Length: 388
Image (cartoon, one colour):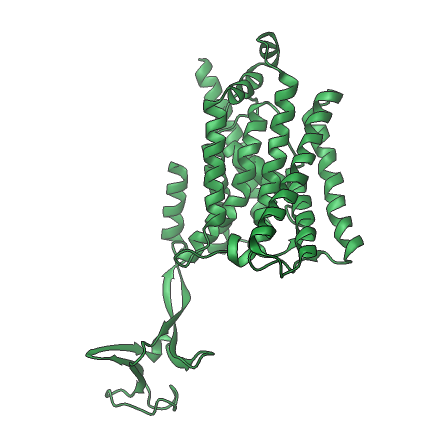
């Protein structure tokens, strides 16, 4: 949390400012017009050319002046209402639109990072999470496309959640069954699944529609639900992230299932002798990982209004990075859902900071890899200090 706060302060200080477009509606009954340097009124239709120096809005006894030199202009919207358009300088990072963007982008990673934390606590790994995310999104997009834009929002949400989480859950179940049944390291199984599922994600839309992007969803599913506005922002992805974080925290720290996950990660042999059903717990954890990847894929198509074949590409790096930066130990036995969400926020702050500071995005993967290495080094240092 301290790192998140310090990063936000640094970006606010060093990120500078940017121009933001502003729209101001002229109140009904008010008068608006151009004035010259001496404050004399000009023809409202003459525009800001010539002697016009400002726009004055007179609403009863209240007079507001907007300087043309600051970019203000008078116009009419599609309904014929008089409006003012202009620009203002705002902090590049702390501007409300940018903060909402950071939070929403982090939510897609954070939801999966909670599941990845459970996998890592189990002393496992899931490299197929990005491909599961992409496959769930593309299959969910096909289902919504078949429903058509005329479907009710309620039905579309239920279908999307059912299809995306169903596909994700089946993929996660397949991972868990193969890892347990074949007794192969999770790295190998999930690496193979990553490649296979990514190929299926590309093949399906091309064979069915001949396109790489599928849209045409019900407006009730996109604008009415996942992009629904509350006080001018679209908070649903963040709400889902918080709910998943709370649920993950409760399961891992307060339920027997969570204690079993930590026990297996600490020592699988000791967990077996303690009577813990190791195989069942492993399959369950990987299935939950798939379900959360499917949920995140559903959020993605709901927020952006389409499913693409490259959705989730290289997300496995971000998800693992979020979990490790959030405190999960790759040796197993340690991690938290809250840490995973904070790690995802840090990842998104890094991405956003590179954009604000004008750093070439080609360095993104380099920074991400360095962050993982640094987090592992810090974790090992803490472990050694603890042993001493």
